[in-house]
Amino acid sequence: MSSGSPTAYLVWSILSCLFFCFLIFHLWKYDRFQCLKWSESGRQPGAFKRFMSYTYIATLTLLIFFSVSYTFIKFKEGFIITPEGNIYPKPTDLYTTNHKKWILPLLFLFSAAWACELITHWEELTFWLFILHQGPKTRLWFDSWEFRVWLLGTVVAGLGMPLTTIISRRELDTCQAWIFLVGSSASTATTLFFLYVLARFPEFMRRVKADGGEPNIVLRLVMFYQLNFARVLFRFLFTIPLFILALDGVQGSHPINENPFWSDFLIMTGGIGCFVSSFITLLIFFPRSLTRELGYTTALIPSSIIDKPQIRASIDISYGADNQHISSPMHVPKGIVRTPSTHSSEPSQSEDTTPEYEFEDSANDSCDHPHSHDGHMRIRQTWEQTQDIEAPPADGQYMFDRHSRCLVRPHSDGIAIGLHPYVRTFRSPIDICDLEDDDHSLAR
Image 1: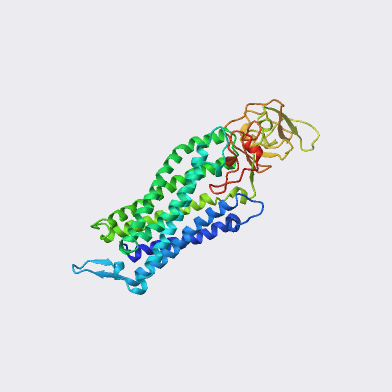
Image 2: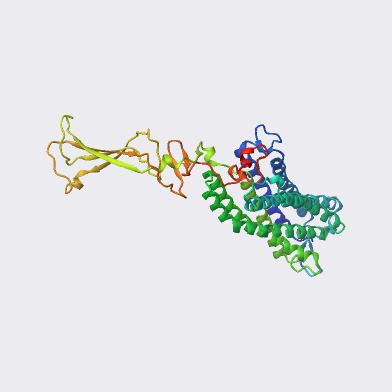
């Protein structure tokens, strides 16, 4: 299978280099490359997250070496003209010896990159299945059957893709077709399993919110759901075109691979789907928190503080120009002074006395207020008091506290009792804390 023009693989090279630049930028903004250090004091989960991080980054690194080197060789070898006058990319068997010796090592790199890609997506799939299948008893990720399934899948992917290259290495023209066939079949199966996760995820998010999940956790889950929905589409865009090319390449006749348009179109489409889905995976595995980067925090506060009925009182006082007597309103601007309200849409602390001002032209209200002839200004002062009577919490509502700069949600005690510890401390599918020492979490 020597289909695909040099231009088609040039698209892979450009996308891989651009994505690598974004990877460096994103990891720097994420934690200044601290996630790449093997030992990070005071942080868990340690080795597991490092392994997944290195596996993901190895995928992109190997793809860069493969795509750039393969594109260079493709441009150097060029095309051939058949006796019928058709122009095709030169078959691998006709390459010069200096270039041909590099084809098999490059195909090994490509198969290793695909194996790493399968490992990362298989881990995320099994992790979400682990979270969705939580029962009344708290389970540990590293003791679960989902983790064992991921280990088995890791061994199969890590050995299966390179073995495919070794078995088919004698025919370099079809070796790439077999890599495409095995890799795209496994990736398509993994993506199909993800459809089950996407179908269950909205119910899972509603349960997390109902059980008192912190706002930043709920928002992160919502973002992950939307990103995974888009990534599934691009993963199909990655695997299906390469699967079509592979099926055509391993059979007797090759009508698709011999068509210059369809071979280039499917290879470029697969490249776009590959790197866009990898871009989304980067955002999921290493999520940046703009709330934290901008200096904000999120918190839950008890309903007894923010969900209390209020009593409003007001006093209308009209001061004269000499501040010596009280009079009626007249045709001058009217100032309304209010202390901040503790309404649930914008809660505030009781000690805040910063006034808010509104000015109205009382000339437009002459029909409502009697005319005054002494040139006095009327001021209305309004304040609110909170009784010590608790009201039912406003379920499903989040509020921003502009004093503590927190996004808050009322809850009975501010603790998500019904949530799994992995959900309460959730950051990303590979950032899994070791809960063996958290006896208070396991006791739930």
